[in-house]
Length: 240
Image (tube, rainbow, N blue to C red; front, side, top):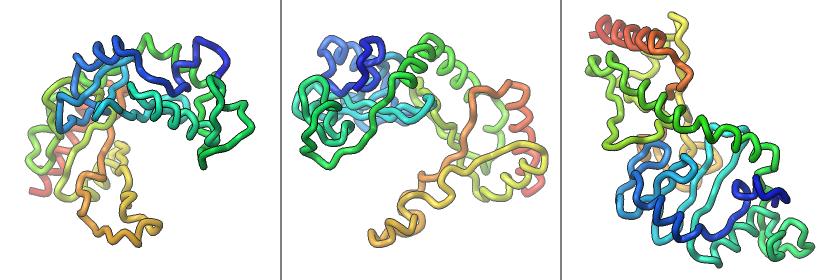
């Protein structure tokens, strides 16, 4: 638990003010750019981040941050109290559970420290621009002309945490692009549900088909992005 008011909001688990919840609820429908199944349960922007609401509660992993971070939103004090305890070694103790000497739950040391929280505060003024830049890059024409590559469509504005494309033969275009100096990355080449530690759960390949994604970074220039599109099309035309 940080001791400085200017950073506490990033690390403390507590009920979200109702006025804040109402404002957030009126906004969009996306978390990390992925649509929620039930828009009426969605929370949207609060300090530029995206949240999803279900039965008065929501959770959000803060990505593209200087270190790992996250938030739990709820209008119920009991889950808020439990979430706060779990992030502080399972300790309860009023407003400062970190200084409690009694561990009541098997919690974790998962507090966001003051330095990273302060760094996040300095990035907030640029967050809208970063989201807009990602949306602009996602709209650059070119890749949509290749039938074997299917960009994931969105209905309203998302934050474009990842730009997902699906290719019929994923490894071949990746090799083609690498030979031309274009880096690509397969997220989770062996997805979590197929990792050895989960072998006992009985999952098989393709049980969760959207577990792999290719990413696109907001630092790309449009010229470099068009170059990527041209090379993907060149591979598709040569393979056709």
